[in-house]
Length: 93
Image (cartoon, rainbow, N blue to C red; front, side, top):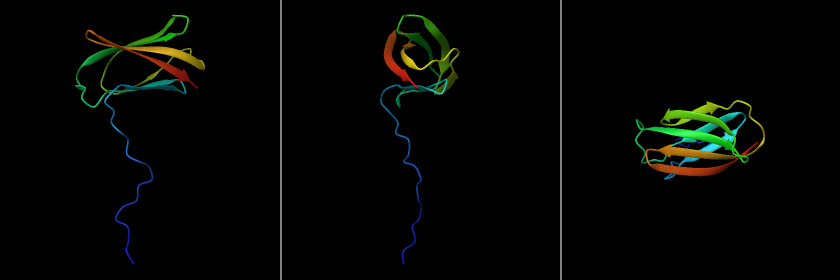
């Protein structure tokens, strides 16, 4: 009888070509694209749909940030890297 060499309980995490941002349980989790330099600083701003800024952080690499006054709803996340801006809609649960 053949014995398995290894068993995976979870699939390995995929590395994306784009920013991966999640907001859940009061934490904003940010994963940079696979071709992003890990030493490059970028800014993350989080806004309500009414335009109120709830958070602004200056970060390097993948991060997890605690968000103050967190509520369930829809938020706009803006990532600024030099002259480039990326805007994402997030649904907070």
